[in-house]
Image (cartoon, rainbow over all chains, first blue to last red; front, top):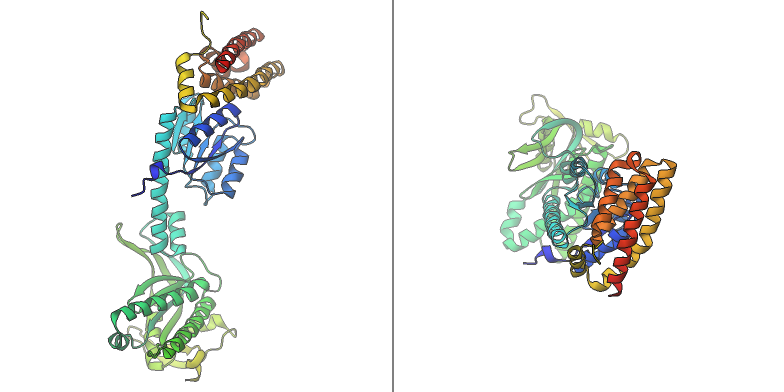
Length: 352
Length: 112
């Protein structure tokens, strides 16, 4: 394993005093790091915003912008708030040291800085940063960027809030038959291609895929982050998805493989969005009648023989922008009253 | 020298951790930077500007302790903590005198 505690890092030294700045830069360079320096807080912030630094060594007493102001600005900056900061100062008074730590400084080293102590503190800070980066990367990979951002901003809480949005369900038609007709390796490859294309169309239109279930998926438009035209975005994504699947189908046909078809259901309305699960394992999702309806509409595409079905609210929000076709009321399981169903004509399915 | 203005242990440690050549350059930087700090202290005292006075004393304290100029650092620290109220031109004169002694020793160490 690569030991990052001894790996070179890019460090920034902010100190108005030239002797201190030179000495600190020198000590850090001797430890193998790449070091840049700034004579005050304002310049330091500019440099941090421009270049990728792993750590800041910050003096407190500086003209133009002092260390306290720098710490405050860093805490308010989403891109920089996780940057480790080690305060190196000869501030008088424990209160000042406490204030630095409260403002988010990782550590405090009194000047003149002891080289051995400096090395240990920097090693520990860089290691902590590496773990935080790794954690962020994991969250980014296993959650959507929107959920990751929501988690970073608001933290994690098992609670829901009412939002208005659009929900989409999508799956591959006759998937079971497809699985039986080809080796498992090909199925995995097909699923990966399918998800790549669907994610692209959904996130490209502002939606969030929050669940992948076998050959299907669920996507939310309008949560965790609000989306102005969620119904329009969901239907545009659906149209792109059908188009992409048709392209994939013609590629498969050329390779002598069976074509694939998808069914998509979209419903719009109020829902409860939030993290559900346990403190140990949770997922971001939406629940409510709107979600159930979207799932029913998706299932109904098999009966209606249409690729995209939407509910009346989605249809109303689309207005004249996207053509829809009224299919009439359908009695769904779990619904007391029949529900108006609309098809969105698309691709080959439109003429099918 | 009967009483040394520079603590030899601190200075040796500085040389060991930063390298003797680098410390020579650092001494030159200090000899350039410190006199303006002494001027700043006199001027801000005369003008009654407390914050820049405190900051100049703070810088001088910090640099003096880097080189092991312990007495100079202690005097600068007193000025930093007590501020304008307790500071007198006589205290600044004593500080300047202590600086001259420390600077002479640093020059000797640099050219050794």
